[in-house]
Image (cartoon, rainbow, N blue to C red; front, top):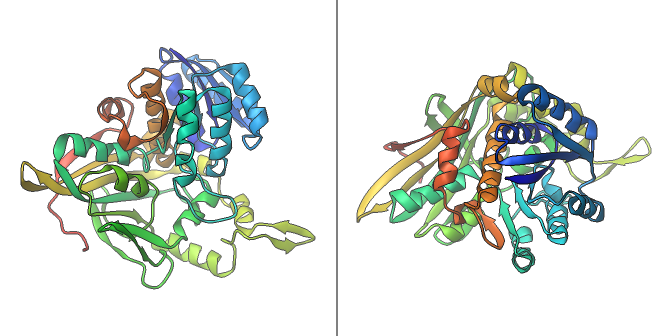
Length: 405
């Protein structure tokens, strides 16, 4: 049905490529490209062994817009799935516009020299994609991505208006390392050390970062995983959801962090290892956080001994037929099961599977349009159905517990 190019051969790229290979009737030609082609070849060899599907590989620097444009013009794919670094989003979007290719990613753009992320940089490409008759789908991982689809589903089927949304993300797993991050260490640490924001009554409110005095947190009782301390955190999907969910008065994002993780991260921050400004060392200028990344375990290597589960979902409070109701939509994913299937831990799996499903929606024409779209702007039904079919089943239950004001 369609030819695709996957950019990025890390933990998520591995999952996307393997899940696409499981649907050869839809993904008829798969290219996997990265700066390090050896990583692509290793994944391609596993796919050939597992599924008998040939994946074509190539080396490309996604920061080189001209080279990437030339490669895309040569391949002529219907879609690029971007699972490279968020720093590279705009370069890849430029190449897609120049080459006339649809675009999908899992995380929004971050400027390399600033620990800050927002959608405005990518929303600014609306006219460029529109004029070329191309579609760009932003944030098609789990959170953002599936959480946005949960919100769209709730708005379409469960509520006339949604007043509050609380997004809960728990990794109740154990990888056996003293300290490691579940996705790119540089991106992860930049994300969780920022000042926290949430949206209430039409404006953004700030609270201290998770490592600072005054950080907001409470114990939430997760399905299967049980009670876990959950910290208020800023997350990108809130920025688009406040634009597209009717009647919304408040939205917050909560994530679990173990005491061990927080203690390690606090020490690293105190000694300057989480910094993003260059420092002089042995006659060279290095960025401390990038050096730390080189010392930490590769997230793609964590899966083999990972146990436990992830639990991610949304709690909604709103009105239906004039009556107040509260609903919880969530998914539980098992680290060991995802490793058995695609040799990846659940955090990579929960990001990679939705990216594949989003690509499926575009190639099948279920999602279509010219311009830049967030997931909640698109019909959720077929996407949600494929989550159940492709390894990320979800549940809807009534919610009766109390949440912080």
